[in-house]
Image (cartoon, rainbow, N blue to C red; front, side, top):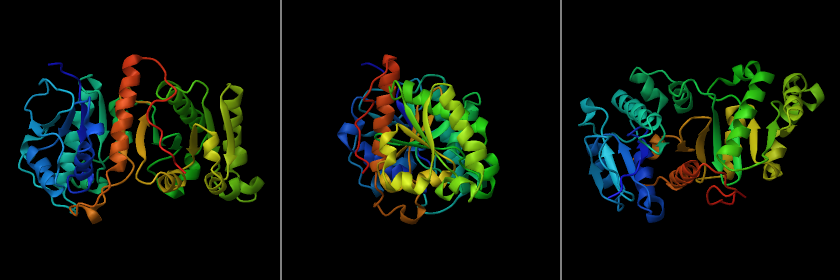
Amino acid sequence: MNSLPPICVTPGDFNGVGPETVLKALTDPEVAENTPFLLLGPLRAWQYWQEKCAYAGPSLTAVTTLSAPFEAGKVYVYNPADELSRFIPQPGELTAPSGLLSMACIATATDLCLSGKAAAMLTAPISKEAVNLAGHHIPGHTEYLAERDGNAEVAMMLVSGNLRVVPLTTHIPVKAVSAAITQERIISKAHIILKSLQNDFGIAEPKLAVLGLNPHAGDGGVIGSEEIEVITPAISRLQELGHNCDGPFPADGFFANRTYQQFDAVLAMYHDQGLVAFKTIAFNAGVNFTAGLSFIRTSPDHGTAFGIAGRNIANAGSVKEAITLAKALTALRSRNEPTTTPYPVKKTD
């Protein structure tokens, strides 16, 4: 029996659709094969969702130690929070215990990845409100993982086939966006993106598109000056450094005209500018990949969806894609060589 490092799966908020979509994804033989999976959280809670979604995948095997042998194609369950071993999900409810369990699972998964005991981490969506109720104050997964990974400089990259979108600013109020856009931040984020495109996706000479902030990319300064004073000079500096970057593009026309197909990644100026377009184009097939970490972390691109939790109607497409990408990037890193086709490309138009 060969023991392999598993893909570590966090449930997100057990009261949301995360566990349901994870179990539905693992029911697909092509998704579950060749890799062991370690689900974090109480077995009792996973069994609750197992019954809710009529799970028909590999049997759930509880382990009490993380030194247990993990076999490809099998699914294991480990509870990192003994005090919550009797936790029972309450679909759609916002509770402090679910937030506490979310963070305990994320912390353990991070420990396993940093120590090399896990091949990758797949994180189901958390509720920031529930996490805050439990006494943990984090903006999101990305920021927490970056801090744990030695304050790594990271980028939240939304991926669907050849479409990759990164927001320059993430979980901040819209009124704070303009002040947060600096030449230094644009250049730094672009470097993270371009390095990931080369190292993680095997693109030797990546092309990066940079969006403007204002309508019509400022219309020559008539509708805002950020493009002239900040964004264009940053693009020029990147070009001087030898990078293939272009912009600033007006966001609406850029996506409507499918100009993104000419680039390997897109740098948006703020969260919704990039993610609304991405989720519209890549409906149920998007993956959140954290570029810049020392380990692999992927996640579905949707939230907890409390409104439909427990009704067995959640779509598992994004989780399937997140697992597929995690497995492909794991294989790429283990070979330590680039590839031009890192994982099966889905059409995004």
